Length: 90
Image (tube, rainbow, N blue to C red; front, top):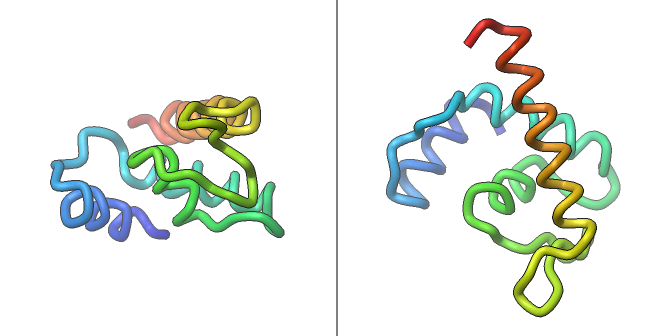
């Protein structure tokens, strides 16, 4: 998903105004989707991060809570997001 698609998703699907850098969200999700290329897409990563929607192929949830895999995806997303923001001066 592009930054503009992320912005539209946040506004139209979640009903909020974006407060974070949508390009950084897009970049972080793309990096993770590439890392898990056989298991997920950037859209699934974004839905997981923003709407807490489970990603079955990564087993991100267990009994309604984040599994070890889900916590790792969140950590990695945060690292990629922060790296993008730091490197692009936002």
